Length: 188
Image (cartoon, rainbow, N blue to C red):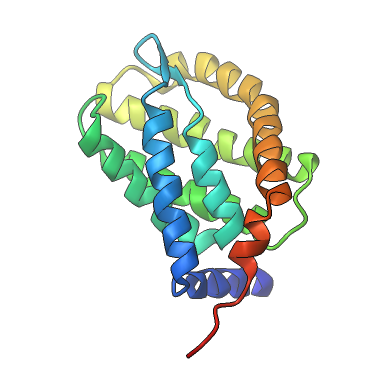
């Protein structure tokens, strides 16, 4: 628990770094672009990969930065391309996902297994349980009726999302971007 609190505090300090803020801005813009390619399957299921930008922020800059980024991006994406009425539950879920993933990946060795486990926890807690609950609250469609389809889709996507994230992470690591972001800023 103490390590988690320290990681959260360290993540808050990341927000003072101009490189971090610029990277978050660029990843936010990229997330908005990728979000426009989301595939809608029926009224309550969609497949998209804009969340990979969020996971990258969570991993690189930690749970505090990830939670702020997730909540802000949810609101910004809604303002740019609303896909229904605004509901605070989705914003809460996006922020909570940043917190969970940030705690699981920030300043830790990035392996497929670690990413898979963190994504699985996130998918079950945020997407399946909370997301299905939010749909029930918003539309009264019945938690139990929506649960099976959402569970299957989310569980099926976890290994794919983990693989995609690892590929992205390794590519930007190889390009030296992660090292550049980790360099301390010179104080003048």
